Length: 135
Image 1 (spheres, helix red, strand yellow):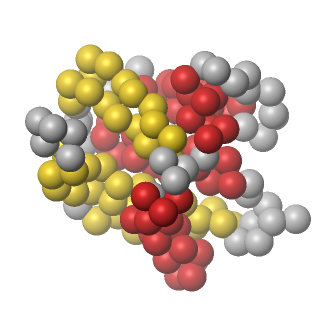
Image 2 (tube, helix red, strand yellow):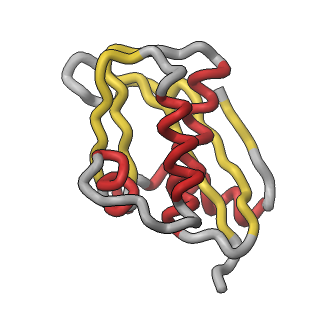
């Protein structure tokens, strides 16, 4: 039994040195109850990719960062995706990536302390029980 869940995401433009330059968009989504941490991570990624598709945003390098080591390793192909609760999320992310124009994708696991914006947005989604996008 899980408590209420939410996800947050941000799309950032990077400078030539790979540092965060500016925020293109960010969002939050209330996911309800009985949603695992990894399902929340995938939901945040799905929402960010959906925003990129809807707004026709492409890039040379697509850098996907997340604080779930399992999700990042699944996306990189290091871990198998066996859970029936995760397979639909994983498949949906892969399908969405097909619709985005990029040259390469790089997945990076970051600590929760470095993922504070997405974490904060997820907490706001839970508190407000609402979805929101800012661009």
